[in-house]
Image (cartoon, rainbow, N blue to C red; front, side, top):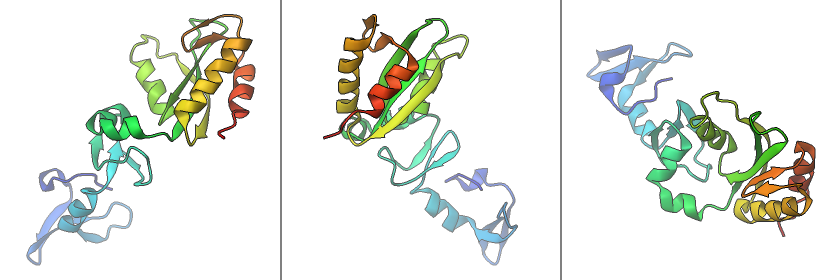
Length: 172
């Protein structure tokens, strides 16, 4: 499938019957480029992957990361409550975990990787919440009570303990 709004970038194009056409990759069928471009004007792609219109950060366009998409719709990002509370680890900090929140925890972990020369952050767990901000606050509060040490969003706590804390967060 092609993901472009520019006829110049379309491969396998032909001009027939007074219109531009391309061959569909999956079935080889002939399709109008004009209709495809119009459809793609309402779609969102992040790193080449299609993002559903139901996604809280949906904004038509092609982006490399969700962060790039968020900056283009910062107000929508700030007002979005839905998302995930996640646990990440890094072997450089043995026995420490980070509990954070994001709309998309995979994307958030990838942004951590850019600051690590070893690309060694691991997304250990995530859970979806209707209010990620409030759920993260609750998780941090409980973790501060149970952790041996803490530093901001980092806690000296087992992954299993942190998972149980996040799993038991009541959203009401």
